[in-house]
Image 1 (cartoon, rainbow, N blue to C red):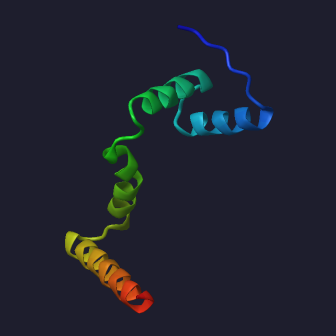
Image 2 (cartoon, one colour):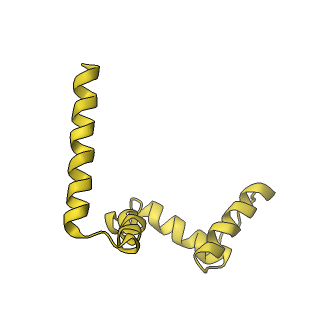
Length: 84
């Protein structure tokens, strides 16, 4: 099926930039976005992908990552108790 969509110049520019950042043309990118929307959005793996890459690039060990996460959890719990 082929569809035609009228886009504002600003929206078209934004979509073209996002497509180019992914190495895709606008039509392929639009089809991908529509398919993801129809299937309920991105998978957890796709959402976490950038975070996983950042962690790998940081060189952080598993123990350091565990410690960082534990500190964040403890900080969140402290903040919640202070607000209560």
